Amino acid sequence: MYVQPGNKNAASTKFKRPLLDWYLISRRTFYQVIAGFLLLVAAIVGLYLWKRHQDALAGQFEAQSARLVQVLGSVSIKRARTNQLEQATPNALLEPGDIIITASDGSAVIQYVDRSVLKLKPDSSVLIQENAKNTKTDQQVVRNRVEGGTVNISTGVIRTSDDVNELASKNIKFNVTQNTSAEVNVAGERVRVNVERGEIRSTTDRGVTESIRTNTSVEYERDQKTAQYTLLAPPRLSSPTNARVFPLEYGKPLPVMFSWGTVSEAARYQLQVADSQYFLDRALIFEKDTDSSEFAWQVNSQSGTYWWRVRAVARDGRPGVWSEEFRLTFVPRQPGLTDTPIYIGNVRVSRVAAGIHNVSGETEPGAEIRINGRAVPVDSDGRFSLVLPGQTFRIAASDARGRHGEKIVTN
Image (tube, rainbow, N blue to C red):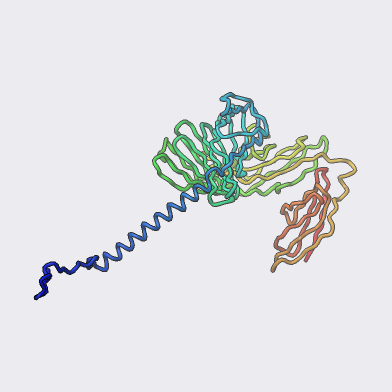
C-alpha cells in the first residue's frame, strides 16, 4: 500500500489491482493451443456432417424383390415370413430372409436389384440377407449368405461407388466388385473361391482382408487361408463363330466342328454345350473331355438355340477358367425359301476417324447380321449399324429359316 504524505486520509487511499494478469508463453505452446483448437472444431464439424448424412439416408432404403430367372429340377424356397417350404417356380419373387435350396437334381438362377446373377448348383442353399435400393442416392445393396454347396456370382457395371454386392460364408465375407465372375464353394467350414474375371475382396472374422483377382483360386479353413493357386486362362473360341445359324436338312446329319485356341500348360480341355446360357447342370446337352483343341458334333434333329464354352484342365487335374459363351442356332431348312437371299439394302459407309467407319443398312426383321465376322444388333425394323476399322466390309445375313444373304462394300 502506498500512502501520500500530509494527507490524513491517506491511510484509506489504495490503488486498484488490474483486472487482467499478463503471462508469457512460448511461441511453440501458442501454436499447439491453436492446432488443438482447430482439430476440435474439425472433429465437431465432421461429426455433425456424418450425423446429417446418416439422417438423410435413414429410412431411404427400400427392399426389392429378387427373382428366380430359371429353375431346373427340384428347387425349394423356405419363406422367412412363414418358415414353410414351397416348390420354386420360374419368376418367383424372393424376399430378404428367404432361403433357396436345390436338391441333387436341381439348379436355379437368381437376379437381384443391381442386375447381378447368382447361379445355384445342385445340393446348394443360399440365404437372401439384403436386396435394397436407396431412393435418393441410387445406391444398391445386395447381400447373400451361402449356407452350403456351390454358387456362381456374376456382376455388371456398378451405378454408384457406394454399391455393395456381398457373398458370405460362416467365417468369411466376399465383396464382389463390378464386372466380376466367380465361383464360391462352401463345405462346412471349408471355403474355396475361384475368381474367373474381375476382383473379389475377402474379409475373415479375424479382420484379415485381401484382394483375389482374375484367374486365382483361394482356399480357406474356418477363417484361415490355407492355399492359393493360379488358374489356367480361358481358351479363345474360334468356330463356330458367335450367333452362327445352321440350316438342318431332314434325314441328313450335320457335322459341326468346334475349335478353340490352345492354352499353355493345359493337359486337356473340357467342352460344354447347353440349351441354357447359364449352363445349369440339367441344361447340359453334353460335356466332352478332349486332348485336342477341337471336337466334331454330329447334329441330327436338335433344332433350337444352344450355347457352348470351353475350359483348360491343368496336368494336376485342376480346371481353369471357362471361356466366354458362344451361341449357335439350328433351324430346319424350308423348301422354297432356302435359295431366296435375304434382303440387305440402303448400305452406307461413313468415315468416323482415320481407318474407322460406321457401316449401316437395312435387312429383314428377325435376320442376324455380321460385318467382317462381328455380330451386329438389328432393331425391330431391320435397321443395323456398327462402327469398326477397315476399308472393305463383308455383310453376311442369316435367319431362322436357313436363308442367307451377303453384300460386300468398299469405302
